[in-house]
Image (cartoon, rainbow, N blue to C red; front, side):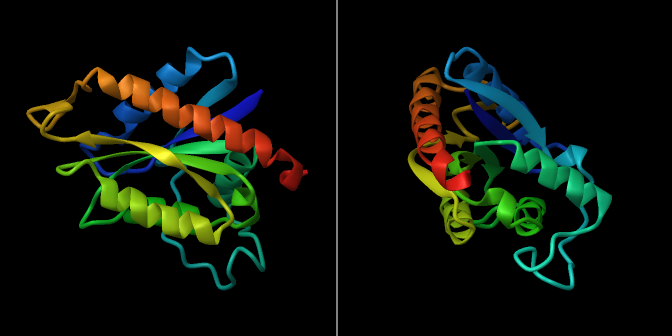
Amino acid sequence: MVRIGVIAGSTRPGRKADVVARWVRDLAAKRGDLTAELVDLADYGLPHFDEVLPPSMAPSTRPAVRRWAATVARCDGFVFVTPEYNHSIPGALKDAVDFLFQEWQHKSAGFVSYGVHGGTRAAEHLRLVLGQLGVADVRSQVALSLTTDFVNFRDFRPVAHHEQAVGTMLDEVVAWAGALRTLRA
């Protein structure tokens, strides 16, 4: 069985990533081909990335980063839930990605983004970052609009067709995670 980490990629007060990530995790839990784990960046207390050496040369010795590394290492693939901040991803998500190297290698990733225009620019930016780390991102993604999928920009009420889009994206993440297993071995 493939293990997928659903990463809530924002830590700010008033965020929506945790609610959206739980929705994705709950949809994933209905499937028989994966185990889904909610991974909330807010639970890790990661500092800003300020390591002396890059993680490809020397893993961090900080307890919070080691705990984060263990979580990422046990997953076969990921669904990143990210808002769009100024056409990009939140700084906390970028730092969380940058703290690790080996733990990301040869895994798959899908994206659920949200923002005024669906957060698509954040997802595209995250694709570039993850590509450098050897993560195989999938084509299908889910773009949630703050104007149509949130009541008063606050309460998450996704349009019904997004459930099918999540399923399609998860199909691809699971397929790639399985295909990349031999490279991770």
